[in-house]
Image (cartoon, rainbow, N blue to C red):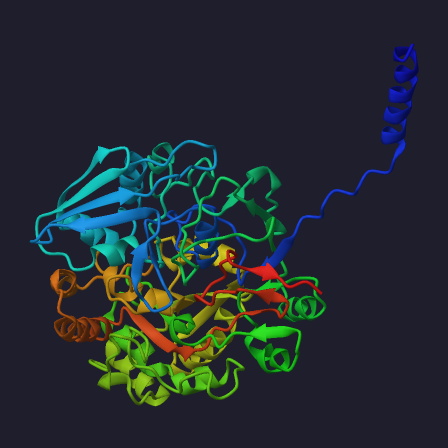
Length: 530
C-alpha cells in the first residue's frame, strides 16, 4: 500500500531539484601580469630573454633555490652530499615530484636536463669541464664526479640568470639546446597550454594541482612555492602610458617593470605598490659590441666607444628620481655587490667626446656604418639607448639606428653577417643584478671565447682566470681573481657600461605575499578580500 505512494513523491522531489536554480560556478581567481617585453620563446634554455626566464620559473623547477639572503637551499632536491676532497657530489631528489603529465621526475631527467643546460650556460660549461662523470645511480639519485676543484657546484645548480638550470623530462632535454623544445612539460607550480597562447596578446598559466610545495615558507626562489590563485594571464600592453593607466584602473595587477618616467606618479597612488628595485633587482645598462665584424673588431675603436659614453648623462635621461640611480658605476659586477671593484677602469673614468673623436682618428676609423639595433618598445632599454646613440654620434661614429621591438632585436642579434647582409654593430641591453654579480654567470665575463653570446668577444687570457676563479673556495682570493678578470673585460672592451639604476616593479596594493626577487614570481601571492 505504501510503495505506490512513494514513487510519485520521489518523482516530484527530483523534478523540484532539477527546476531549482543551481549555484553559479566559482569564478577563477587570476592575476594579470604585463612583462617588460613580449613572450616569444617558450624555451628558457634556447634563449637568454628575461621574459622567457620568468616563464621558466613558473612552469619548471630547479634542483636548488636561492633565498632572499643569498643562501642556496634544496628545492627539487632532498639533500646533497660531498666527499671529503669535494670531488664527488651525490644528489637525492625529494619524494612526490611529478611532471605535469603525471609521470614521476627521475634522476635520469635531471642528468639529461643538466647536460642540455650546460651546453649553453657559461657556469654550467665550467662545471662539466671540471668533471669526468655525471651519472644516474637510481631513480632518485645521481652523482657528479669532478676531476679538479670546482668551488661553485651548488651556485651553478641554483643560479637564476642568464640561463637557469630548469629540470625537464629527459625526452625534452634530448632536444638540441639551439632548438626549441616541442612540448611545454615541467614540474613547476604552474602549467601551460600552448593552445591557449596568443603571441602578442596573452599567455595563460594555470595552477598545477599536482605540485607538492616544500614545507618551509617561501623565501626568494627557495622554500614552498604555494600557489593561491587559479590562473596567471601574461598580457600584452605595448605602450608604457597605457600600461600605467591600466594598472591604476585595476585592469591589470602587475607590471614587471614600472616605466621609469612614471615612477614618481605611481608612488603617489595609494592603490599601487612600487618596489625599491635596488640591490640584485638593479638594472645594468650596457652596449654589446659586435667583435666579429668591422668596425668593432678593432679594439682601439671599441675603446673609443667606451670613452664616448658619459654615464651621468645616460642616467639623467632614464627619468628616475635621485637616489634611484648612480652617476657612475665602473664595476662589471655592479656596484655595491660582493665582487664590486674599479680595477682597470682608469681609462674611462673621465669620458670625453673630444678624446673619443681623436681615438677614432688614431684607430683609422673611416666612417664605416655602425648599425645599432634599438628596442624602442622596452621601457628600460629605450631611454638608455637614446642617450647612448647621441654620444656615439657626437664622438664621430656613423650610426645607423634600426628601431624595432625587442622580440625582433633578440632574433636579429644572432646574425653574425656583415652589416650589408643584415648584420649589426651595437645592441644596447639591460642586465640585472642576477646576471652580473657572479663572475661565472656574468655574460660579459663567462662567455669569452665560447661563441655562445651575441657580441662574440674573446680574450684567451681570461679563460685561465675564469678557471682559477672556478676552482677557488676562499672568498678573499676570489675577489682578487675577480678584479683581474675585470681588467681583462675593460681592456678588451667586451661591453661598454651605460650605468646602474633601479628596476622597480609595480603592482596593485591588494596583492599580498609578493616576493621581490628581481622578476615576478606568482607563488605565495594572494588577492586581499575587500
